[in-house]
Amino acid sequence: MTAHDPSTTLLTAVETLEPFIRYHADEAERQRQLTLPVVQALTDAGLFRMCVPRALGGLEVPPLTFYRVVEAVARLDGSTGWCTFIGGSDGLVGAYLAPHIAAELFGRDPRVVLAGSVAPAGTATVVEGGYRVSGRWPYASGSQHCTWVFGGCHVLDGDQPRLTAAGAPEVRMVLLPAAQATILEDTWEVSGLVGTGSHDFTVAQVFVPDVYTWRFGPGMPRGPHYQGPLYQFPLVGLFRLPVSAVALGIAQGAIEACLALAPAKRAMVGPGVLRDQPFFQARIAEAVALVRAARAWLHAAVQQAWASTLTSGTASVAERTDLVLAAVHATRSAAEAVQLVYTVAGGTANYRRSVLQRALRDVHAVTQHIGTAPQQYEEAGRLVLGLEPLQPILLW
Image (cartoon, rainbow, N blue to C red):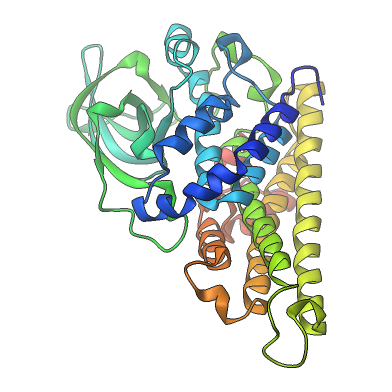
């Protein structure tokens, strides 16, 4: 831990909020969004400022602190952990904005929260001073409590796509106040991570000044507030791969819930309680091993990439490969662990009142995210074999 690492403070804050977050988890499912008191509490604790530069009043935490805090919240509730991951990484956006805009956005208002999608699902038509933007973007986690939204757009000059120097269609990210977007609150009808409020949002012919846009691609410039090592760390390691920390947190919470059940629940077959059954003993041990081993590798990979970033300003391809592999492995291991404890807990785990059924739904929702989907094994394999990845973001 460095002098600038507030991990103890943040983890203590999460521990303090544990009964509060658990109390509001059912309501978040019913509303399909985090409750406003929980959003307020996360904001007050600084969890949405983890990736904001210290120069702008943020925490600028080391990557492993980010992973640990996200996991700690997800252990209490998967949806809250997911929104902590999304909101906690918001500060990265300022790296690609004009310095005065980044300062205005993140330096003046400690309650700023972003939501959006990098998918180029919109169009940005060139007009004087900026772009006229329209589109519909999915998966805007935290959409109901955000203050700004962002989305990827294909750039149009008139009715023709604008091309980059390499001849590819140009894609830009656009950022605008949430009040200028329409949140489609009937779109997030899902099985898992229900409380994240990841609805679609639309924008119709809204003018966005050029200074609130940035080019999405390799070699993106970083503003003067974003020169610290955190902003040299592989982008994918903060932008995608922390979904693995959400998965591990959900699994850890499920294991603890199952352990709490074990001394009290009568076994359906044989005498005694669950704790006394050899089958239960073996499966709970397997789940613990899956989570602990996956966490150890993930943390080691994050720390190795961070150490290289501190010493040389970047992480090697081999270290990036290890990051991807460890994150995918952690997510799949977490899902397997939750399935194990859900199964051995018996029929009562299927009731809505059981946290195990929510954990099962939530962790399988995490596995669907592109950042740690099975296809990433293919990407990691390409890197292991010395081939270029199909997703260039792995090397940004």
